[in-house]
Image 1 (tube, one colour):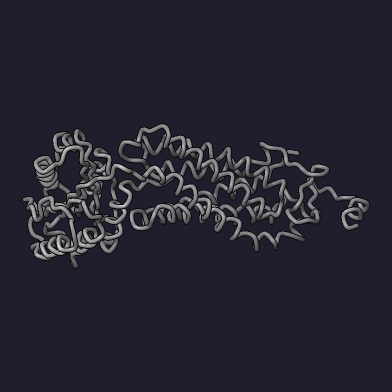
Image 2 (cartoon, rainbow, N blue to C red):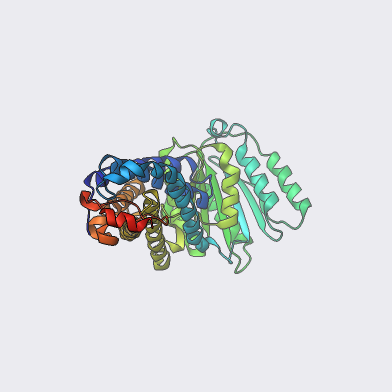
Length: 423
């Protein structure tokens, strides 16, 4: 029997939009700081919780799917199931799906050479008053594997080579590099990112070992005019990634420039929001190279990779199906769980396609995420209209051993049926 609760559709869509707003705050606050598996767990967990609250309220107000007796006898159980069935279940689902999606980040052909470009212009006195960028570089070097090579440049309107490409053979080499980092002069002057990138490439070309990959980590709080086509051409030719780190969220122009540099070289962009997060970002770049998650754009050589696109869609379908099951658990109703899981999978398919086509295009990412979240919440709410709800006599049943009194269309079961159930 096909049923529909119009109020549930409205409130589910409202919940999806609230979940989107909370999710955007989470992404804005923690992207580049929190690990992606945890980030996506929290994102999908809170989204499911908000949608679950709205759907439960809709059925309590107008119990079109479970029947009036459910509201009187069992609606209170829905509040008990709500947090574990939505927040916790979807947190686990988000973590697992992001872990699967993140497996593509592993790269056996990791860079052997790392070049650090650290902005030491005048503005860094305000953006990084405690020299956290220097401390992050020192921490990164201490954690690098033996056999890696590191070079360090500082730049303002000029670029200074602090440390040429130096092999990390032992603790002594690391201590020597740390001492040279401590001797870096105080920030002064303007910013010239283009010159820094050009000099870094010249140094890598001069010192390059054949068939050995290199990567650049560039940290800056400012903006400068850069001929990206000319400056980045050798990076693209040598397949050298530039990972960029922005530490001043108010510098929109500068952050957009850093994003373009990272995207066009196959690297990653990180907006740390707080300068204290630089060390974690450096660690992430070194450990994984790429930091993509299910709700953002892929960068680098995988940007147009059909495998990763298909994987994203499949994982969002799975998340949609689990979200549907979670609603069935909230209502303690196995028939609705089946129905919502199918509807959630359909909604997840639509949301996954929206994310994949939109995030890899020219549309603003937050608009794409809003459309995807809305599509998932809306289609999920239509599940019982799209798919017939099963059950004895068109009714539904709980997950527990004793069937529930949940008549559809206000029907009351006969005394004979009730008696049979409790024999």
